[in-house]
Image (cartoon, rainbow, N blue to C red; front, side):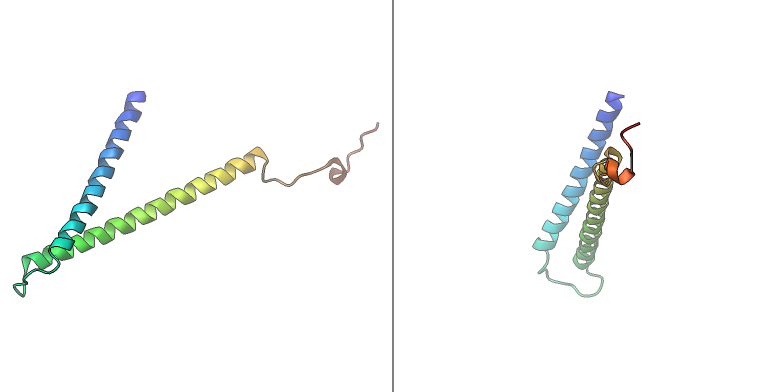
Length: 103
């Protein structure tokens, strides 16, 4: 089981590195080729620039929504844990419950 968990962590790290490198290299390509000599219609560089812009836009939206989902999940999990532990429940005293202590 430990080896499987380690394997999943390695795959997650590899995917994170691939996504970060894709964002980095797409941004670098955009910055370096933004002022190119356009050949007009069917320009290869313009086509690649559009592809890089779409890639950066898609990855940034996906990462943003993923981070938002993880944050919301952690908040809800913490609230459920506090509720189950009785921290969020109202304090109830014996007087409020109208309990008689004598027999």
